[in-house]
Amino acid sequence: MKNSCKISFEGLNVNRLMTVLGKKGITIYGVIKQGKKYILEVPASRSRQTIALLKEKCYNILGIEFFGISKVVKFLKKHFVLPIFCLFAVIVIAVSSQLCFRIEVNGDFEQQIVCDALQDLGVKVGADLHKLNINRLQNALANKLDATYAVVRRSGSVLYVNVIAKKEIDPPIKLDVKRNIVATRSGTVVGVLCEQGTPLVKIGDSVKAGDVLIEGKRLFNDGTSEDVYALGRVTLEITSSGFAPFDGTKTVTVETGKTFNTTGVVLFGKEYAKTCPFAQYNVETVVTRLFPLNLEIRKECYRETVTQRVPAAIEECIEELKSEAYRSAFAIADFAVKDIKYDIQSDGVHVTLYGEVCLE
Image (tube, rainbow, N blue to C red):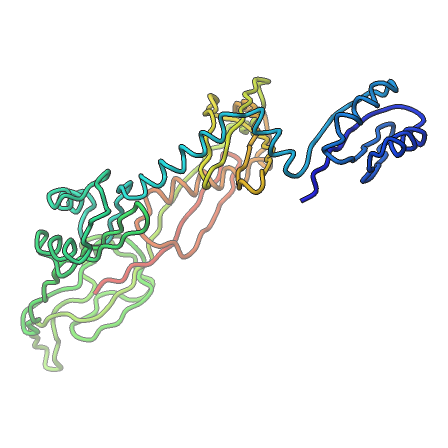
């Protein structure tokens, strides 16, 4: 890693300056001209001598930047608390890696029920995982919840728990007992499959909740009938609608002029910095990576923003209105959306979400 120093300056007779530096035995790694500004790169060990010479020759020094180990050393001298903080963080992480920070639950039981059972078994957030016996915990948890089985997996300070409940076997179907297939909601019939019974609807019919779709009755040619257990499937197309009114304005985000600046450290993927006090903001981030310490220094400038309503034509707001209408319709849609249709009017945007439900 080359330890160097880049010095930005302005002035005349730069060729003569290079000659003077050469006579002083100062190695020049490179010179870059940017308009009236020059960037001179020299060894870090000769930076003070070079800066003193530039000042002696009345050059206007604009900036000084170190690279390599010298940059790290200079940063540590300026931020002398950082090494102590890093050492403390390493110790804290080493100790805390044996503690349970989070429990994630999957499976057939609610998270609170599983967490209560784990707590009764001595496992909770903050518990010491160093001597945890996974196999013993799995058996104890399954017995406590009367479950088929439980799987516990540890990843660092997180426990992943999956508990499967015992399954009940459905009783056998009595085919000679009358049973109808009934609509549980309103919709339009888009498919009918009847295996046993008498279908009372056809494709294209509109039905409402409570309507009999396939009756549990078998009809014979002589006009007689008998009760049966209706078997089949009726597919209904169901919808959900939403509307976003247009009031002649649109929402824009503008900056207020207030700013908040902070410098933070990223250590092991976690950032340590002051929290921005603004509810809404734009942010600019400058990242400096320090090698070989594997640290990141993040300088962030937050600019506060607010939302306002300004006059607008509906054409400027179509996408925003579509999103708003979709959200209102989706909030009451308890089905998987298969199709979406928008209707744009002068007063706003209507949307209809389409899905299907199978009744058996």
